[in-house]
Length: 210
Image (cartoon, rainbow, N blue to C red; front, side):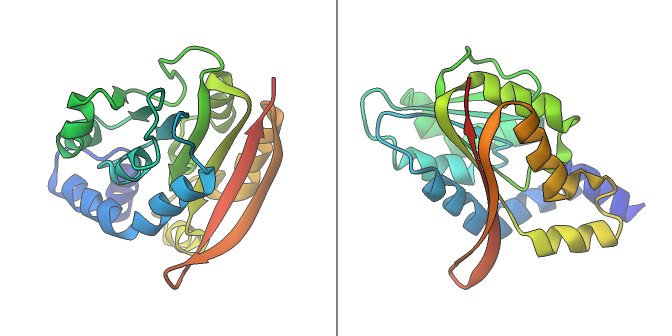
């Protein structure tokens, strides 16, 4: 029962003690993943950038540092209303300044026009999507030709969670996700193992074509 609750909260935190604990986990454990997803995207000052599954907003805060140009735009979408409200509070100054726009919604329906985004990133996220291909297809729709997406994860930790029954779906495995990306129009799909601040993590890269 506890494992099932934890798995549910990791995918869609709610305003509960478990959801609050998960948010603390995101703020600490995911910092390296968030920082590196942003860094590996190679964000330029005037890019339009989207984070899928922004949680409490750690990655959005990092990405905003790179968007210093007058045309730079930053968007985030998250399925959890609790995370949406938390990130809205945490990133109030960016929202007030018009530098950030947040959406409460699903990766399967992103409220952005076709071919508008230069960079997309997400961390510890894809294994909670309702459907890998539908989510990948929708992200591809909003990306410009040649736009880059970076997904970061701790593969060893995810494998451990799966072995303990916290993650019950095979969608956590990188191969089905990477296959979904290729099937929905992405090229140069690859996974690399990187290290940062003494921690090993995986980064999955994909480039959109039209």
